[in-house]
Length: 446
Image (tube, rainbow, N blue to C red; front, side):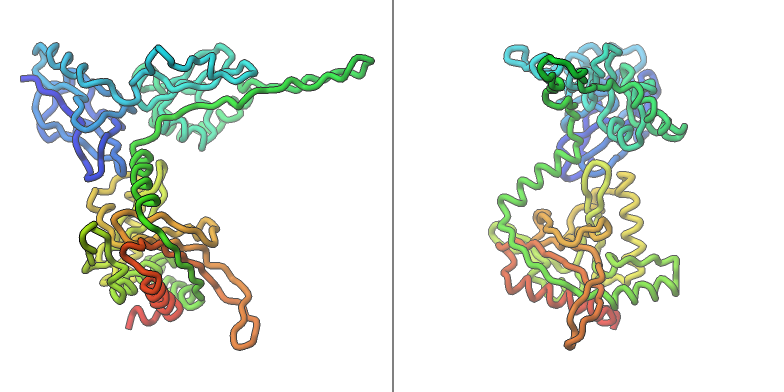
């Protein structure tokens, strides 16, 4: 009997998913438990397994398209089975979000949105969710490009018009960009520059006529790209953080000379360890949380929850946003264990292979932008945690010590605190302990 395959819930915070890649095509035999498709959730790319056996009769949601939980995305049945009733039922559930077309009445036309100089702004395509149509304004035809492919091409300097899309309807998708990059696609950037229409200011030869001014251009052309599932989730979570949570911020400056020296010595003894300064910061934060359990807590409306372990979320920037893989029981782990675990988690986070339990349930988070040259910043609390630590760069600065001007490696950190859980004095005492541990790192191993 034919059955509908619906968008599954693959992570605790998932509300919709995007088809990254179908692992089977229409007409292929499918067995129960066999990988059927790769789904982009809000945090990772995960395999969806078939829950039935038969033939993949119809794909309802194409690669790059998004569907909410429970929406039919495919039909599995016998080879010659009538599936017309299931096709009608699937159509009745509504099109994917990015396929929804604007109502004709009151819809803004392309001409209304075109810049004043006659060039045409790129508009979202109706050819499929997660796709963008672009038009160069020269009548050379439209391109249908997935948002991920568009970003990858822009970063790699690849001319999209030099590619042939392998996705549905000729859509250019991720694998097309990867193929172009492996084939030296950056050379296409020069072609793109040659094909890009140039606008020149109109020069007027000297004459007795009044001075002619250059033609005035209108607003900049633009393109709209559908937001990724991850970016939508980040937006929703931030709304529940910076507004409802009463933030306050505490900043302190820490001498990192001993940490820098300790890290250098440890890595010289065993280059395979590759301990980073951030690994030491994670260890110090976990040790300070054990001494100040009021910070290792979360607000629960009618009670405050105090956690028995220091599970540290480590912010990792990935292509579509930010994810915080969690180092469990960081207070009980050695520096070498933390270093190895953070590297492994970060690598899998960037390839979107983390399991939900590996990026949820932190009790405290750390966001480090020091490696990007940021001296100081504030971070937004990740609910339901009560605090997050924003870490800046380690920078040599002149300071006065014992009446002498000396150079020290200084690092500024700012802790964002949920005032419903943490008072000013509580947060200050935590930072005092954190600072003492980093300025005397041997305390963490005795």
